[in-house]
Length: 233
Length: 106
Image (tube, rainbow over all chains, first blue to last red; front, side):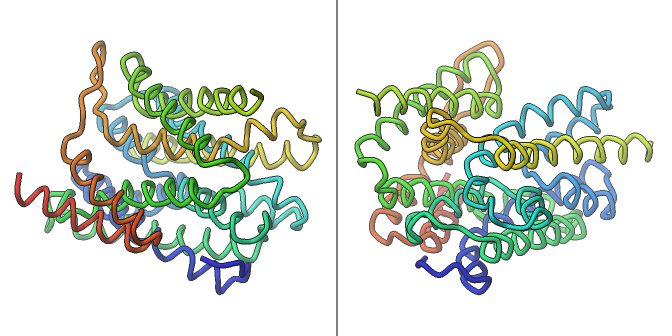
């Protein structure tokens, strides 16, 4: 990653995250096919919802015949953290035209968000539409296609955990977290480590009482408040 | 059946889109206070730590979470590869190979 904020750089920077999209996308397609959803439904869901964990959740709830309202509320909870990410990245994009600005928000994911935060460390805290749009759109298309391929292969590959591809997404978050901690010099490394440690303990405790995705949201909010308290001292 | 499936997908899509876009609208129209900016500056490390930790645990309703041993073991070489290489691509490749080895051996 370097200081360049062009469409070309966006394409180059997003490549490492694509392995994660492909791994999880294939797994999702296979799981959805196993739940008797058609390839078309898989494709439309990937285009309209475009969120890994939520899509898995929707499939399992559809299989269970859950009411639409229950599905909507669950999706709201599982994806609520997206609002935190949007809120964090939006101030850097305010100068973009309204349509582009909305488009950038519409396609923001955990991955392209984390990538943007990493990029800020190389660009003197600048972002632009050309760079993020390219990363967003490539990620979006790769995700949709991977899920479709997974659904088509579905019956041929019955185990979605073939090889270690499903771990690509965890590995990517490990990489992004580490790079963020060492490259974000707006705070001392020790403060990053304190926040990370606090959040990890919080997640463990929170998951005694709530499912993982809710814990991620609550744990992140607690971690940010903890960080503010540490910074004030 | 199809109405139910497509209805669920469309509503889920709208909910997710609003979660992504409404904060963009707020930021464009409202001046963000210093306190909020300070809060948001911790979001990247906090959220990535949360996602990582969640992937190491298995939620069991009504009791403490268990550890996901496969992910836990595969994370060790993955983290080391990040410290050594500082390259996202290397981390992802080492991660996938590590997990393949863990599954092969366990």
